[in-house]
Length: 240
Image (tube, rainbow, N blue to C red; front, side, top):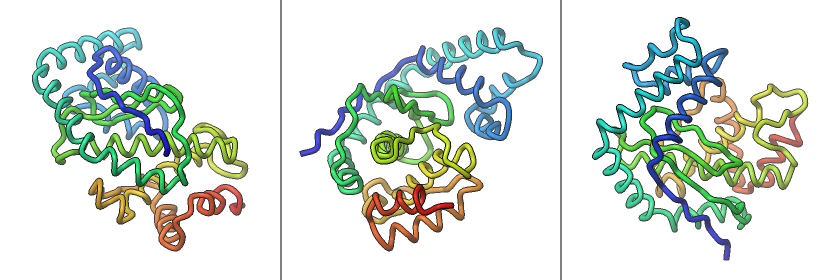
C-alpha cells in the first residue's frame, strides 16, 4: 500500500510574511505582475509604488502582516480548525484517487506543510513541501481545493523528475521557458475537470490566460485514455 503523507496545516505569521516579501520581489516586474495584483488585498496595493525602496517595502509588509494577524486572530484560528476538519473528511478518498492517477507512485518523503495565508494567492515550494492556503474564502471548503491542487503539483513534479529528469524550472527544447509550469497547471485543471476528482472536490477549473488551447487538447486526451505515462509522452516526447 502506498504510504501517504500526513499534511500539517498550521498558522505561521513569520512564514506568511516571507511569503508576501518573496512574492512581491519575484513578481513585481514582467508579465506575471498580474499575479501580484491578484495576490495583494485592495487596501495594500499601494505597496507596489515605485516610491518605496525594497527595505522600506519589506518593513511595511512586516507591519501590515503583524497588524492583520492580531486584528483577525480569532478568525484565523477558526479558519485553521475548519480547514483541518474539511480536509480530514476527503483525505482518504483524495489519496486513493491520486494513487490511481499516478499508478501508485510513492509520495516523496518530506514534511508536508500547509500554512494559513492572509493573502489572495497561494504559492507553493516544491522542494520544501510547503504551500499556502486561505483562512477564509467566499467559496465553501475552498481550502480543500487549494490543498488538493498543491498536493497534485508535488506528486506531478516528483513523477516528472523520475520519468524525464525534468524539474519545475527545467527548460524544454524549442518550448517557452515556462512550458513545464504551464503543463503542470493545465494537467491540474484537466484532473480537476475529470468527473471522479470533481465529484470529490467539486472544482470548477479556470485555466490561466494563454493555456486555454492546451487545456482543451489535454482534456480530450485524458478522456480518451487515463494513462499518465501516455499523456506525458504526448507533451514531452512527441512534441516538436
